[in-house]
Image 1 (spheres, helix red, strand yellow):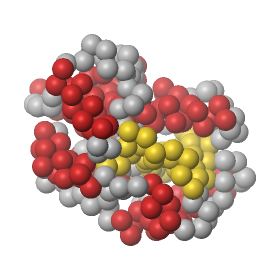
Image 2 (spheres, helix red, strand yellow):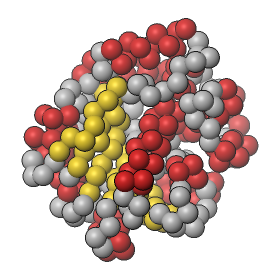
Image 3 (cartoon, one colour):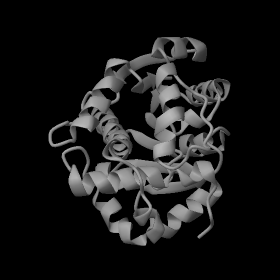
Length: 268
């Protein structure tokens, strides 16, 4: 398997979070596939993991939130299709597949190669090697499914790109019709905290981050076109807090109180 760069290497952070939640906090997230993959991960990754409960559950909470949006979308639109940008080592398909949905997982070629080594393509999930910010992937998906509604997910992705690039991507997606997108983001205060504290704790202080959203309505206005806000909610609103350490509960409460981390769902 190839050695990954700094940004791509962060794909191990959510995997460790999902493993931790599955072992110690299954009320938040239980990921059977992640547990199966634990023994296949680099041994030093587990041994040298210096994250605390909060940072581990921050990653697991992203997956739990995405699962909730995906399941709601598929209940509302049974003919819907899921396209995951920056899929990394996510195992969403194995948690949320309903037995008929078509799934697409998009990431850079060397990440997809690494993913295939750990997670061979399952039935109805197609891996696409490419740049999420270039329209090849969405043309492929739309050509495959024609008029079907598509939910695009971008978990832990947009932070690393400048606003103009994210807006251009969202405009591009909107051009293909019948599209929704859900992603996690931070506000300006949350971005400061991520740079100062969170990324150091997860071992990636050298990863540059740019994109944040103070108000989803303002983002929709910048996207223009038919962009509308479906949801903008505090990150930990629906995350069970029972059994967590007090310090973790406090960190989650502060984050939600100041809307430092959030989930945004748009109709494009």
